[in-house]
Structure formats: structure tokens, C-alpha cells
Image (cartoon, rainbow, N blue to C red):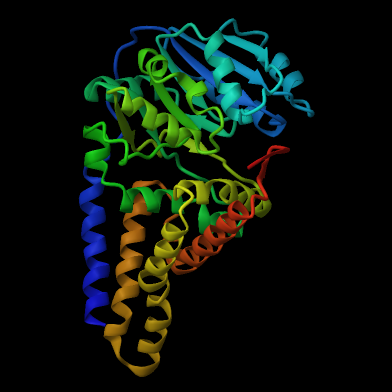
Length: 364
């Protein structure tokens, strides 16, 4: 019991120290060179209007917006044309057929880079909304750290039950397990995190690493291309962009399940050992404290409640840093259980070579 109490509060301390090395987007750089904002889109009619309305307000200049329709079967292309025709900064292009061996989004991103003229590439997902000053703020951090890539985990709205459990867990995993000081100040690729919804490249770094073609078959292309950037000697800066970038990742529990199912086992390096170790770790330190606290309340042994208080405090600190709902931290034991379940489901699907389905395409 005493051991569990000490360890959970050490987790709190470690998280606080780690977050000290996560730069916030506040200061701004003056406009210098052309920035290309690049957005791949496939069946995104629900996001077209919100996306266009958001990026149209970007204050940086010079800027160009290139939007790629990747074989949509809904009204995405029609809406893109209608909503951008009055602004010469916008260019709408059609994607080419997906070659064998390529992941759909990765191929779309590569096609976007072929049409980009900027000295910097800002890749966004269609479900992202940004603050008007986002480019100036990111450029400041890029120049401050002399980085080839700046990325960050946005603020995530969590409309469904499963999204409340799993989507903010991305912040938790990164801000707790990743040594951010090492990730931001060295080029050691083992210490890498990235979010594909927001990737700001220096063009030279993008070209040096081989661009998206170097990770053409990856379902975790954001992390893998980030490692490629580091391999070429460029620093990568992970920033706290949650007050300037919002990502509406999923609208339904089915989308949450499919999205995490395709990424989570790959994120462990397809390692069953890692899945087992993560499962044991989160079972002991993040699920066990809940029944232990219930026992403590019933028996009057109040010290049994301290481990739960520790993990709640740790999660609250991360939720505050990531601009998340102020009551979300209460769900951490249940979120940990969901994390374990989907990790095992993702691993079993991978081991059985059943493939992962996303946006109407299936990948092994």
C-alpha cells in the first residue's frame, strides 16, 4: 500500500517536471516566406465549411491553401469549389488513384507537396480548426529551437462515451511517458511523438527525409516521418498547441474504435510484449486504485484513497495543460481499462492479419 502511494505521487512529480519542457504557443514571428497550408480530404463534407472558415481567418501572409479531394464519394469536391472560388489564396486539386503499397492519406499528402510552393508546409487534417495567429506562433517556436518540424497534440472535443475515455488518453501517454526535454532538444528518434493533424515542416527538412514517400505504407505516418526527420539531423519540437488548435477527431463511438484500432498496436511497434507490459502497468497503477479507494471508504482506512487521489491529480494536471474538460480526470481508471481492451483488440487483429479499415480502405 505505502509503495503504491509513493509511486503514484512520484508520477505526479514526474509529469509536472516533464510539462516544464513543453513550450506553449504564445510569442509570434514576423512574416518571412511563403507558407503552404496543405489539407488532404476524403469524404469530409461535414468538415468543409468549418475548415474553410477557420483557415480563411489565418492572418499570416504570404500563405497559400491547397486542398486535395482524395476520391470523395460525397459532396466534398462540390463544397470545396463553391466555398473557395472567391479567394485566390485557395487551390483545390484532385487526388490521383492510390498506387499499390501506399496508405491513402500518405499518398494524398505526397501529392499535396508536389503542388506546394512554400518554404514551409503546414499539414492539417480536415477536422482541425486553428487560431488566426497559428502560423506566426509556430514559426516563432521553429526558429527558437532551429527545428525542421513542429508538431503538437491539439485540444480534442469528446462528444461520445468512448471518445471521453480514449481520445484525451493521447495527451496522457505523451505527457507522462515521453521525456519531452530529450524529444525537443536532441535528434534521438527513440524519443518521438507527433500528431498527424498538425505537422509544420521546414521544406528543407521535409525534402531531406524523403517526404511522405519515405513512409508510404505506414498507418502511423506522423510518428514515422518524424523519426525520418530526426535521422537526417533535424530537431523536432513538440509544442502545446491545445489553445490554438482543435481537432474534432471522431463523431461516433464506431469512429473512435476504428481509429484507435488501426493505430494503437502499430504504436507499440507491433510488440506483444509491450502490450502485456502496458496492460500490467495500467492495471496496477491506474485501475487498482479505484476498488482500493472503495474498500478504504467502506472500511474507514482512508490511506487506501490516496493512490486514487494521486492518479486523479496527475490526470487533472495533464487535462489543464491540454485544455481538456475540467471533470475528465475522474474517468482515468475507466479510460485505462478501455485503453487495455482496445490495445488487445488491435494486437489480435494485427496478429491474425485481418487488416484495419479506415475511410473505406483496408490496410494490413
